[in-house]
Amino acid sequence: MRRRIYGDEHEAFRRTIRSFIEHEVVPHYAEWEADGAPPKSFYRRLGELGIPGIQVPEKWGGGGIDSLKFSAVLAEETARAAVTFGALRVHTDIVLPYLLEYATTEQLDTWMPGIVSGECMTSIAMTEPGTGSDLANIRTTARLQGDHYILNGAKTFITGGANAGLVLVVCRTSPPTETNRRSGLSILLVDAASSGFTVGRHLDKIGVRAQDTVELAFTDVVVTADRLLGEEGRAFEYLTHNLAQERLSIAVGAYAAAAAAVRMAKDYVAGRTVFGKPLSSFQNTKFVLAECHTEVLAAQALVDQCLELHDAGELSPADAAAAKLFCTEAQGRVVDKCLQLHGGYGYVLEYPIARLYADARVTRIFGGTSEVLKTVISKSIA
Image 1 (spheres, rainbow, N blue to C red):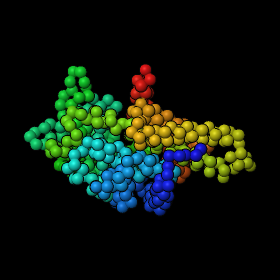
Image 2 (spheres, rainbow, N blue to C red):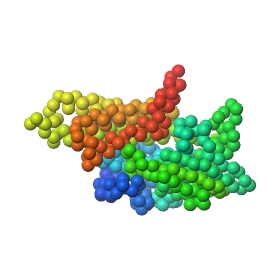
Image 3 (spheres, rainbow, N blue to C red):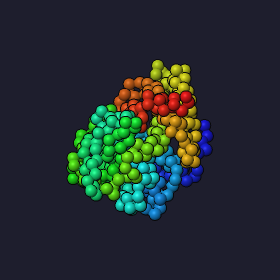
Image 4 (cartoon, helix red, strand yellow):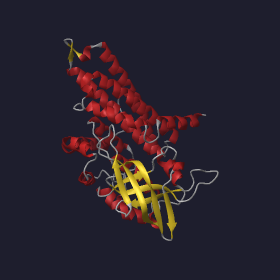
């Protein structure tokens, strides 16, 4: 199906990214998976290409592009090669919007040059042991003492936390009120080099193994009051504001992975012979590929419409939730069917479809579980 959302500039970017992946990512990817993350030098290399700051205004050395479509191209090309750029898209699609929307000019002057160059990667620390989707249960505290906060607590499942130079920490700066459990939450900009800031365990995951996911601990970390993001007590409001882009970003990645799986399966069955016939000639193979192709087209249409709405500032949280729900569930079904067409080889990590299969499972969990998204969607249609 012909797509109409991309222009010549997007396709030129696609060619650059595809070549970059072929020459500078694929040859090293097994090493990154073994290490649990790309080296920091990789992010500096991305900075040379202008990728980390593509949406950052030009005054800070960024590309000044107010669109998520370049990130979508990046997602499609990494999925096509069954690789990731570590925690890059958390940095660009999730963390940067908070900074660009709520940070002061002084804060941006401090952090943006390093962010654009790839010298300073970012992360956001929300989840805690026992606190996932319900942020009102956050127990990490920041106590204001004069001109600084004293931060104490622990976080888990923090993507990009090992390589981050700046971490946005969601913490409780005051108790909740009787009428609003989510009040009293704030976001602090925490320098990872701060005394008392500790990177704990690197979590050993089923998939997405080249993306660091860690535990963080804060023991009497001093954070000056001028490192408060936005206003005190408004973190939940800020987090909700950016959920639409975060969930759309996940939906794009899920669609792209499903499309990549279909391409891999199509190529595999064309070259595989079973009972003296090409595997592609069997009716079951044709029907499975037809089913998967149709699901990918539906996901593509939904993603493309949401990208257009997002760029126009019209994407609602409920529509973004629907896109993530549909695309991630479709991703799970499609990748599973495409692995099945590979037979036993699909379970061997030598074949990229195995990596797509392992990586797919988490997309129905992070950024809001499928169950949480159904609640969001149901409220919008009640």
